[in-house]
Image 1: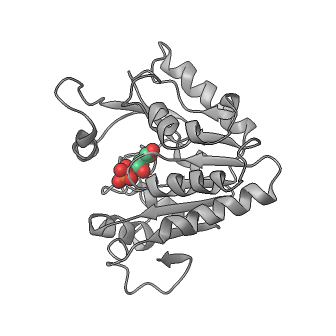
Image 2: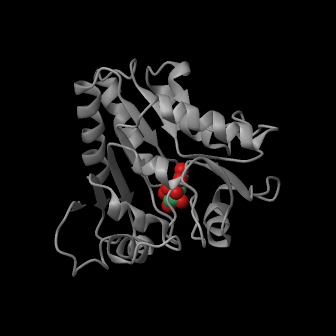
Length: 240
Ligand code: F6R
């Protein structure tokens, strides 16, 4: 249900906007959303005028590497809809010039203001790969992935393929510039992170808490992810 609800939000945007820009996430959370969007496409929804910008990519993985986020997006969405290749943007994890790549990605984000940003959330409160830290960066940058992020991502890698320890990620400011943000979270293991995002202090140690400053953010949760927020007066929280 939750994913169908978010897919319907995206569908409306695509029907109403001539050149919509989607900010997209990878990971297990948006999988059913992408499946539903593919289904909508089969029923006639066109992505021909859609532009997408993804949140992040691993440093050191080529777009052809099946573990890369570029490959994930191709598999789960892009190869199954009619989006033009030139409208798809992800950071290039194979760059020899990380600073230059971050600047290039910022220029892309500046040219393509995001209409809807889809987010997942890490158990440690990260959004994109903005990990809890003493300071956070506003724009695109390189991050060392936190130990519990590496642990969570280990399920996608095996002995023959070490887990990348760094990623290029959009910064908090770029995320907050989106016109609308939809954070999706499923399962009890996200409950504490969701609770802290919604009602914790706004702190760089809890990156998702910065969403409290955004005027148009919706949390779309299943029962498990919503299980710690009983005391919060209903705002834009949908539990479906
Ligand atoms: C992915 C991303 C991450 C994930 C988060 C949750 O592009 O930016 O913030 O959204 O780590 O991952 P899952 O959905 O696998 O639990």
